[in-house]
Every structure is written in C-alpha cells, then in structure tokens.
Image 1 (cartoon, one colour):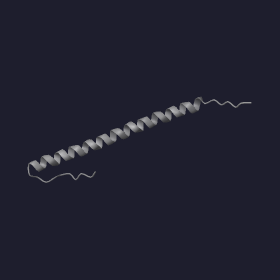
Image 2: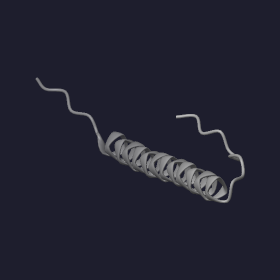
Image 3: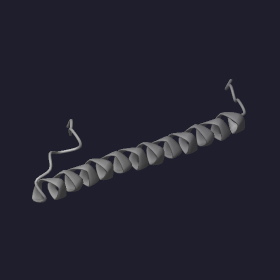
Image 4: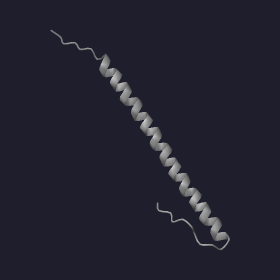
Amino acid sequence: MSVREDITERRRLDGEIQQQLEELERFARLTVDREERMIELKQEINALLAEVGQKARYTIVE
C-alpha cells in the first residue's frame, strides 16, 4: 500500500517563497551598494574640502 499526496500546491508555494527570497536578496544588494556609494561620496567631499583648507563635513563610520 502506498500513500500519494498532491504536491502541486506545495511546489507552487515553494516557488513563491524562492521568488520572494530572490527579491529580498536583490533589495539587500541594492541597499548595500547604495550605502557604499554614499560613503564613497562623503569621503570624496571630505577630501575636496581638505584640499581647500576646510574641515571635513562628514564622519565616516565603517
């Protein structure tokens, strides 16, 4: 005797979960990339200010 079950719904849900995880990973990567770029820009601004004899405007916390 064997037990069979319809796994169609489970496969559909697994697919949805995988898709949501991929979206979250993309969002996280975009967020991290944005933050890294902001740090770079702040460092560039601080360097430019130093060149003209002004104090740094941004404190960079890494």
